[in-house]
Length: 305
Image 1 (cartoon, rainbow, N blue to C red):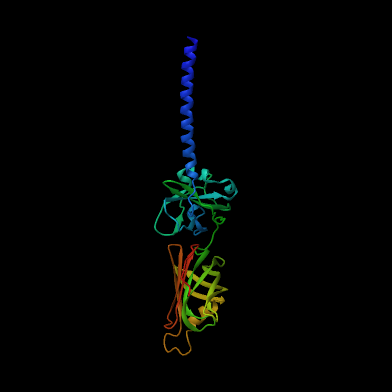
Image 2 (image 1 turned 135 degrees about the horizontal axis):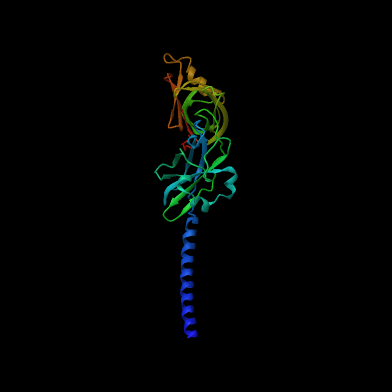
């Protein structure tokens, strides 16, 4: 009787052990699934910036690019306190409650713009001034979940002008570097725009490259630096000034050519679209081209020649 009872208990324990082994295997598989990495699924050009002065996460905007969107269904964007970033990994990102991230579904555009509105940080706290934050993006897919390798810049809420931020873009012009009108060209430009003493006046320092032909007919690119100053009021630019390497492009357009018979004095107008794209157009000079397009923190790929 004792032997029979022991065998019954042994069989039950064996069945239970087999069940636990199967359950553990399934649990391990499900836990490991979010850690699968798909090659070339890389979040790039990730930049976090402050676009308002409300003192909350509604001030913040994130832009990033991802040229490989296959298998991705959505992005989850999270704001991490700087002192927590070292210990933040995919497992923690995957387990975050919905109120701790902003989810956006995939679109056909390689450039993405995320507004946070009422989001909390990854610790469940409100986004507040005088505290540093870093953003990361998690890619959600049917067969994998992957956290961006790249972090955003470190950002703290500040009172600032709406145009303050990092910009990349292009200048389409037919003005040569020495101030003469020449063949049409496209210059890539990148740099920072900052407000001057809360005055609604802005100054931007930029670097850019100029394509030149050498004696063998091959293109090479010369790096330059320059700055722009302008007034932005009621949604429009009322003036534009250039200095250093950009001075000739601005001044020559405004002056046009001495032998111009009409519309010889150029001017500039500009608009801000969707809190992201700043466009400055030259007007009134019928022989000159000046079209400057700057996009905040999103890299623009252009065909230079």
